[in-house]
Length: 401
Picture: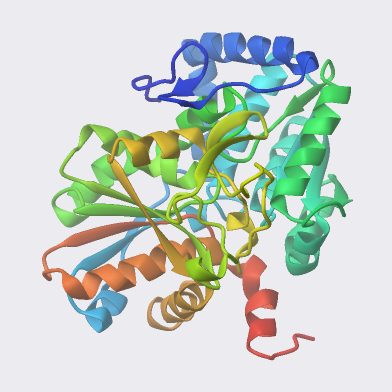
């Protein structure tokens, strides 16, 4: 697990991050930070974490050369980091497993989580069942409607799913309710946060648990392709899958890092979820400071994305820092472009990708034809798309029985 480039003692990446929380949570976050620092230095804890990743999650996830799609696009060769093949079908299980082990280490019997696309909710419900913990998942009512298969999976795993009907009824509001629950039950409850955001130390610990993605790529790419990629591409909502693959590559300056946000119906329409690509200003949300979609009065504005997991008005603080330092680039892909990439990967490679991941695939499809045939693009395929078939069918005017 990488220990370099951690935020400062207050949890800041440059001017982003920090901890802006109710007084009730200050002590809990300090306890979590201290326990995490002890755990990451504990060889037994780390050995158990990696044992669970190998024998329960199914790591390492493979890297796959998408030869047919690459040939059709022309130009660069596209490789996919297959996080969709993890147990539960996405990268979310990596961090959920690490946090569940921390919860057990701290003697917490109940875990809570927020979820948008449902993959983090499923991952949290899964690790709660694995370790015999009570589990409550908060999910926006609109996301429940478009992610019904994942809602049923959570319930099958023994979790209580609570619908959030306030605000935009999506991920932002689910996170609000999860934070309220934590404030009320902080002594008995561990909050398993789904993305590399929130108050310190969450952006750091989620990044560290997810960095297994990039660490595997560092040895897999030379083994499979003969060298490291020219660019690594990943979708960005809060930013956990992207920072997980980006962080180990920070020490490789020749590798471009490209984060792909949800352009929704287009940046010019205001109906998107792309704070970095749209030039949003900095603000505070959910306990941390970062780029944030807000109006002139500092009020958070509603977002839109075809993908529930990217439908969030902020972004993790380390991504904000990487943008300002120009180590990473951030672009936006709109709904139609993501849907085209979704269908293309299905038909040319036999892989059904998550709509979140499809944004990164669409960016690769834009770049590949402009590059030489010996160029290499590595896309983090952060999740599988079973959960999205109802959304895709509905957009195509098809009713699934």
